[in-house]
Every structure is written in C-alpha cells, then in structure tokens.
Image: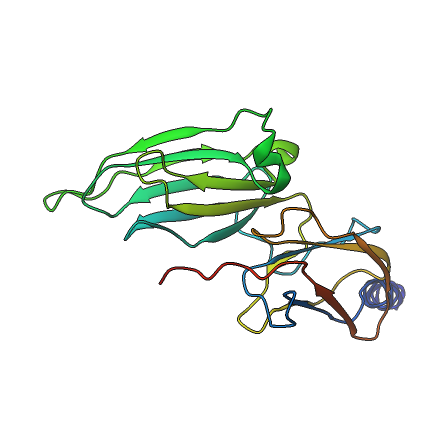
Amino acid sequence: MKNLLLSSALLCLSAGALAGSLSVSVVDKDGKPVPDAVVVVLPANKTVQPALPMPGHATIVQEKMQFVPNVTLVPVGARLAFINNDPWDHHVRSSPAGMGQFNATQAGFELRLEGKSATKPAKPAEITLDKAGALSATLLGCFIHGSMRGFVYASESPWAAKTNTEGLAIFDGLPEGAAQVKVWQADQLIDLPVQSLALTASPGKLALQLNVVPRRRRV
C-alpha cells in the first residue's frame, strides 16, 4: 500500500511538472510563414528533458552545388559528417553567422572534400561542435564555389526545433514556469529580442515577426 501511494505521488509530481504544448509561429516582414527558422526555448526549470532529444550526429551533403539540408539543428557537442556527392571537389569553411560574420574573431573549421567518383563511395569528413558561443550559429561556405551557403545551429538548450513549411515550431511536455524563447533565422542579421513567458498546463502560442524577407532558396 505504501509503495502504491508513493508511486501515485510521484506520478502527480511528474504530471504537475509538465506544461501543455507551446506553438511558436515565425513570419517574415511581409507576414508570410518562414520555414527553417530555429526556435529555442530556455525553461528556468532545466531538470526536464524532451521525450525525443535532438540527435547527437547529423550528416550534411554537398549536392548540386548546395548544402543539404540548408539549415542543420544539433545540440552542442554533436558530431557533423560532411559528404560530397558532386563529381568535383568542394571545400567547407565555417564562420560565425549573423552580424558576427562581419567581425569574426573566432576560428572556425575548414575541410576539403574530394569529388565523388563513379567507382567508389564518397568519403565523409567529421567535426565536433563543442563550443556553444563560437558555433551556435555557423555559416558554411565553399572557397571553390562562392555561391554555396549552408548553416548549422548548435543549441545550448535541448528544447529547440526548426519551423515547418507553415512557419510553426511546436513543443510538447515543457516544464511549467518561467521560460525564454529566442528565434534565429539565417537572413536576420540582428537577433530578435528574446521573449519571456510563463509556461502553464494550458497550450501556449507565441507569434514572432522577422525584420526581413528571407532570400529565396535555389531549388
């Protein structure tokens, strides 16, 4: 009986510690939905983790003169694998994104990837994102092909997601209490103000608008 009461109490505490969902909508300067914006939630209660954590490994492919995916979201400490699927050589260079790219003082990384041969598979090159401050938002480029751009966001919070085609990022099971929400988007050079809110058991909604219209991605 005592064990049953203890289990019931723990279940009540666990349920009480979790809030309802939070839906964050991101639109551009013209009010249109923005896909691939990164939304990061920073709850004051850091003891609760998402049911589905972000994977600690991601693969970025260079294909048709593009980085695929264009925006990669990982936790700090994740490993990135780069694969060149084009038949010609590519280079990977990293630098701070946003305003930091114009006054870069942090050293990034550089990789050279051979073109893919018809007779053998492409060889991946790996790096680890172990510095949140320097690599939270990273611009990827290629010295050989200057039009290539990609981005990596290494989140310091486990509660982070990219917006979908409708400009929405939805979080479930967040801990109740105070929290901050910030949004990063590749073409928004000056970061939007961090939003503060109180998470409750009721579903929450937050709408954020960029000051820019993101450039159209090459297909």
